[in-house]
Image (cartoon, rainbow, N blue to C red; front, side, top):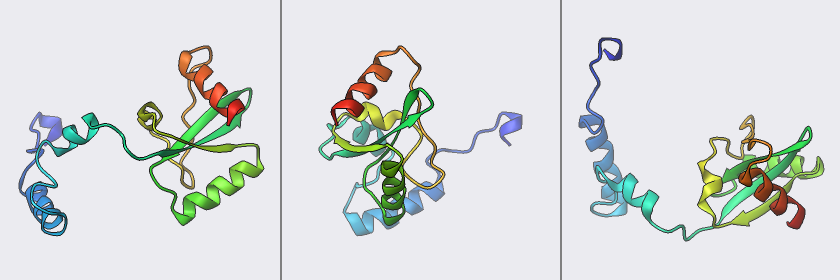
Amino acid sequence: MLKLGVRPESHGSDFRQGAAVINAAMGPDFVTVSSDKEYVQSPLDKELYLLIVPFQSRLGYAWAARLSSEATEVVAKKVLEGGKLIRTRDRKWASGSAKIKRFGGLNIPVAGTPMAAELRALYEGG
C-alpha cells in the first residue's frame, strides 16, 4: 500500500486498542494521540547513562535510560577496554540511535564538531 502512496492511519484501531490497555494500567490519558509530543517537550527529570568508548582516534557513545542486566554486561566489557560510563541529564545525547545493548553500535560525532569536543571533555573529565 505504501508503494501506491496509501498510508495507513497512524493512530488507527491498533493504536487505540494498545492505548486502552496501557491507560487501564497507568491511568486515564497516559497515552494519547499527542502524548509522545508532550513527553519530548517536557524537561528531562531522570538521568541518562552515557557510555563513551574510544573508537580508532575518535570517541563514540551509546546511551540508555536504565541499565538492564544485558546493558550492564556490555558496560563492564567496554570499561575494561577503556570506556567510561557517566550519567547526564542533557537530552541531546539521547538523540543518537545507538543504545547501550549487545550489538547496539555507537554514535560517532563528526570530528571537529562541538558535539565531538563536548564528548571528549566528558570522557576526559568523567
